[in-house]
Image 1: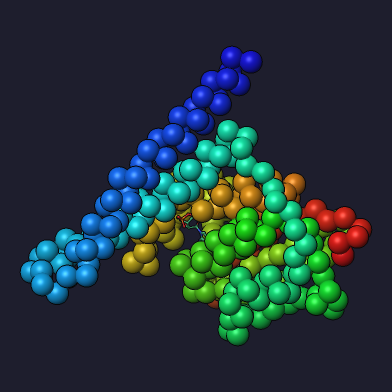
Image 2 (image 1 turned 30 degrees about the vertical axis):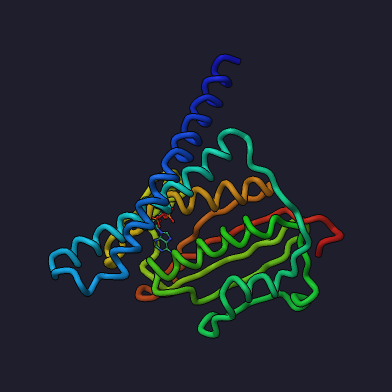
Length: 234
Ligand code: ADP
């Protein structure tokens, strides 16, 4: 019981720290906004400094929101708000109907309805899609598979793929793989996939990544979210 109490205390502490950081962050964002609006009055050197500040502030802001979210899971405060979601509409909305993606949906996809927390699942799917853009040259395929007691939603890209070593750890908190920062992008926090995992687990499902190796030159990753379903849903 003492250990449990300690874990809860740590989670509360993380949550309080994140909360406390919100208000100075809001002030910082407002002040940077003022500077941004008068950017062309600044010297080149100050403009560069402002760009650096804005970028880091953006990342800091994301980090604090994600930490708040994570501490909510640790404190056992995260809960599901289930609602009926039409799978096809949901996926098209998440990808903003991106026509460069191949959608591989089951025959009865239009009438496929699942009971999920829409906000959480949309966030998880967007995260995978964003990652496909950032690390894998964009999503190529979104596939939905229905099994007897589950549904799988897979996001594929044709990027460099992820090594077996990294596949074991990329869902861990603050884990950033070798692809991060390589494409001029260091806005990542390393928390995105751990949040996806928490959201999917909350639904009683699981998430994993596979490598696609169609040929020696064709690589890519396939992230799969599997959610349990009931007979009435499919
Ligand atoms: P972040 O994007 O903030 O680094 P994530 O938890 O979303 O954090 O991802 C962790 C790491 O997994 C990334 O740093 C990247 O190296 C790797 N990764 C995620 N998605 C892909 C992908 N589609 N292709 C290649 N690597 C990926």
